[in-house]
Image (cartoon, rainbow, N blue to C red; front, side, top):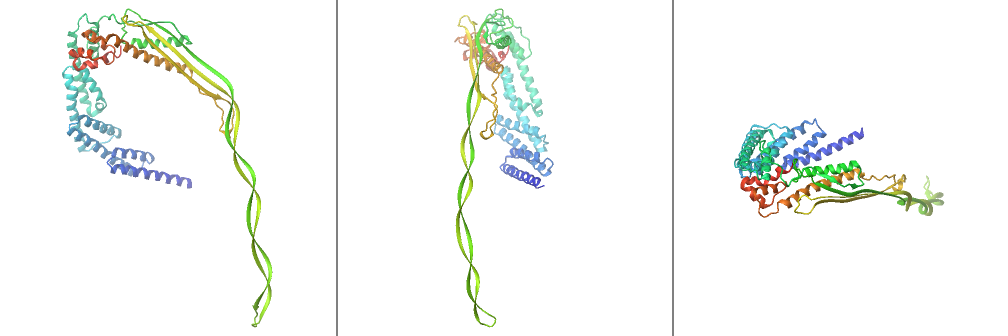
Length: 472
């Protein structure tokens, strides 16, 4: 019973402290944070009506504050800030499933209308100018806000506007395609496909390759591991700008290297410090008071008034000091010696792959070198005083480590293939339209000379074009 009372008092104290902090935050106008603390309080006391009502009041004030901040930012001409506050408002309203009063409903409608006007400029203007990819990129940035049901109509209207812009631009770009510009025609094919429009796919350009093949092996890999390595690198190549499904030439990559796991074991003697409490005998002085009796004469007056003497017993006190043996303890440092096996493990991997992709340049080469060394002790000894317990080292499995290294090689292989394409086809100071489109095939930001050429036809969308080649 006493224990239950103690627990109840502790819970009550904790609740009081939390509530005081929440009320302090509310006084500072931090209603969202205060409401979050009330969430914690209600989790402890889910049926406390006073807490529930207080939280609802804080939530209502928080929503009013968020919407007011959005309104103020909108009036000051900062639409982006206004929509950031509006997003917070809608996120909390959804999470709290709150009903709004008439005033907040009216303010929310005004903010939705303000967002519509802003997006008409932000998304609608580039869309009407034929810059559909730019408009789409902006629309994606606003997607967390537009995902709320209150803005569903705006989202639908903007998506339709961007899609129509893309379709119209596709028709215009199809008219600029020529048979002797395979890379530009590939760009138009991908651009139109992005907007679900048809454009003929050109024949594969001579710079592109079909699926790769591999020669050589990595020593230490079994057949399945070798196949997995080749499959990962093939996947990276077929996602690179160098690949086309219809490519007739098949690059033959050399593949060599070594994977080895080395293990070692030898006995060792270990020591663990510990402290022993050792008894010893000491002497302690003690003092005692002794009362010794003695006889003395004293005078007294009897009943007749005569003075007489009599013998009485009195006591004298004196102290006596003596020494007694006592048992005391002192801490003595000790060492506990025990035998164990010191186990060590080291994984080493070296992989190199090379091929000539551009005859004007040297071979494309990617390499990976890495190692992992681990060690630990193994024994079954238990000695509680020295904190010694049985041990087994938990080493990284060779297969798990190798899998991570193969994935790291795939990522590096993919990145370097894109950079190799960029170095091969984006470095010319002056580019034709087809050469600029070929440069964009790298799927990464194009240099300024390519951007200028593409901008003559695509306008602001020129900077978005590489994303069309980010996947095959």
